[in-house]
Image 1 (cartoon, rainbow, N blue to C red):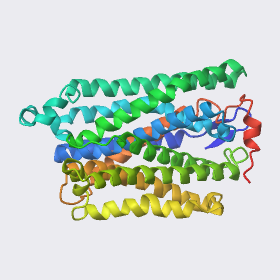
Image 2: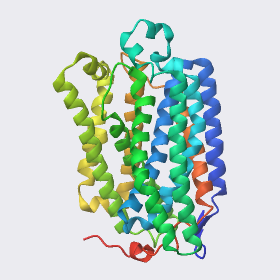
Image 3: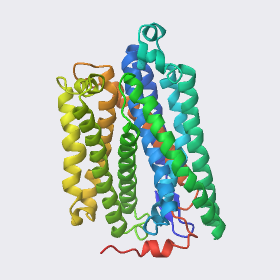
Image 4: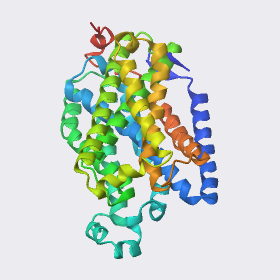
Length: 394
């Protein structure tokens, strides 16, 4: 795998793409076997991995929108990586099919007899019903697809010739796009994750999922850029100054995730309303307590004290394990959100957790590199490109 310095395109990624797709296919097949052996475990494991990889895609969409709204200079050389994660996102709608098929295993609000004996669920029926649940998910992906398509189309058109119209178009799409993004990501988090316990609610749950997903995609892009650098790809374009900026964003969203997580917990603890506190009580039982503490220290304390140091943000050898750790902790976070609905008295890892992760992940990574090979790795005709390459941190 290398980069053509004339066209700035990625070449020679064929073997990596084949391995990714084969790994993904193997993961899906093994997950299918897992379904035959233990359908309940399969659906929860699949939902966890589905939510993980969707968060990477929507995180790419958010970073692309943010780039255009702020007129950022430093991130120009990274924009195509954000855009590629965003462009792969619609493919993940296919992986919602097992979730749709497993609605009755995952969500107790989908059981008519349960609803008939639960007054609260009866009042939520106009929103929490199977047809509307599926329609909403299709709407979310349609909005993300249309936003991503508009931004990406203008971006690659700019590669052919510079025209201010393309920049204006991307800004015009991003302005209403950030509002649509905020609404869809929030309701997607409510639907897929929060309604696993339909009696519990949090008004900032969507922000919680967004914060973790954005942190994860920043780790994903940082790790990918460092791997590229080791192969001489974009080594001159993505400099240590850009890694410093990525490190600052990793630190920022670590703090933001911690702030939202603590705010959600503190307000529920302070109000002490039984139907709210029971959700946290389920995550403080037996071995779930260990996972909860792991999130406190692993998802916040360790990255916080590591990334707060300026030199560490510029140390690529340190950023590699740090980004892998952040991605792992994001998966643990989603596991902690999903699996207590299945295992009430302590966590239980399953081999299906792994096969579902590599099944969806392998296809995502393969599609990512297929898309990445189609166009230049950087927006070659962006007027801010040269300034981005020469960016300095002080």
